[in-house]
Image (tube, rainbow, N blue to C red):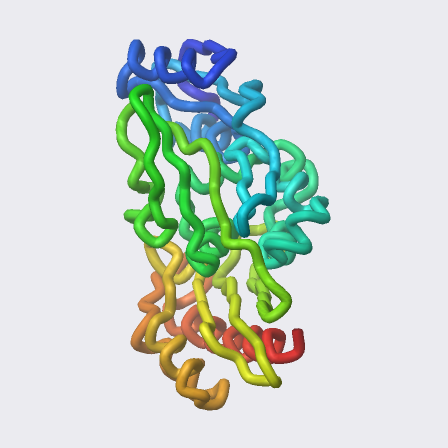
Length: 281
């Protein structure tokens, strides 16, 4: 299947991108890396009147560490995050998750902001952002606002972005020496979308975990923060009890290959593995 016809224009600055969004209205679609959008176009799941290419706006890319925060521009590619020593040192969960994203060719072009704005519930970055309690910097023609990752995802492919807004950057709290993180997922084949996955962070002191955050992908309409399982972990209960508590957190949808019950079972298996990984970190 081929993409429907559309016009194309390249924005040379953020200001020009806002002007183009205003001019073309709801018929416009932003093009960043295009690794999700092009597939959606070819499948006729998206049919914009015009694509606004923002991929060359330099101010929307790059990694910066300052004042206890890691700020990543929305146009930073998956591969740049994967290779970054600053990310490995200050936001290791992202470095752990990046190799699970599709394949190297896609990671070289696809962007952090593009993935987050697409809001696929089986994607890795949304769950990582929820686990890390990241903040999204969302800009419009007349100003910007910050949105917590936990408030940003509204449903399958649905976000808190409003007409005329662009996701420009993501801010993460920098990890310290007491922090531990782990990322695991299960997929039919390496590079496929996850059947289910988990992004986890915690504090570790004297062999004891605290402030455990467990965010699941592929288990619902959005990345899911497993509050019941986290409460079980916070009370010091064994990993089996933490995994059992997931029944109150996850109501996964079945897909063509995996039943809801199987997804919940696999999520429990991953929970035990990730808690072990956090304890060993």
